[in-house]
Image (cartoon, rainbow, N blue to C red; front, side, top):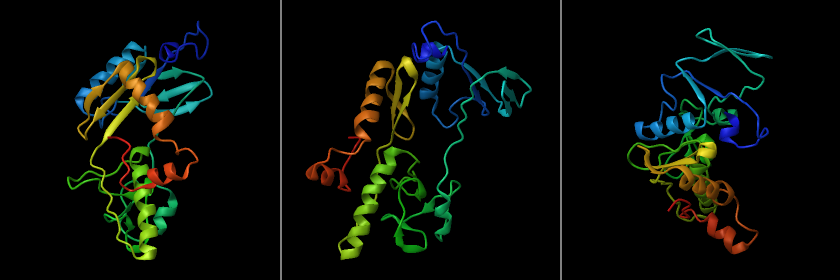
Length: 231
């Protein structure tokens, strides 16, 4: 029930059916077993129906037809399809990954065009020496931007460049009124769930990822390439 996930958003007595389609055999196919079990339990508690192993074949004004032939009558469809780098990235020579991102060196020089720095969602950048790569999210984009900006300015005036490294990786997934799930590490070890996770998610969304106040000291502090959002 949508009103279970977001109380009263469509009226206290609304009876809304929510169906989640996933073409993989399980929801969250890239997640580890521990967080996946938490997500499944949260969705079940919220009344969300889960259909796996099927995809959307067609959408019309009155509903959705799945590849397995099932028909779901609905007036609202929310479609998610992942992310890709901006087409502009394709104009920069060098190796690109499956998302169109440019492979960069530790200082974020872009591919074969070493006078260009790539950052954010167009940079395929190593976060550590273990083979992990930055994902297309604010968590990595903010640090990538700091380092790329610092290095672009430093290179212009002949100062040492700062290598990009971001070994700590976390995820924080909002699960409606049930709360949120917070994990640490690339193996996604569960650290917070429910209300505790939700409180942290609100902190991230309303404070951590926003620009600082219009104060010179605060702006320069946040621009420091060693600035850490997640301690």
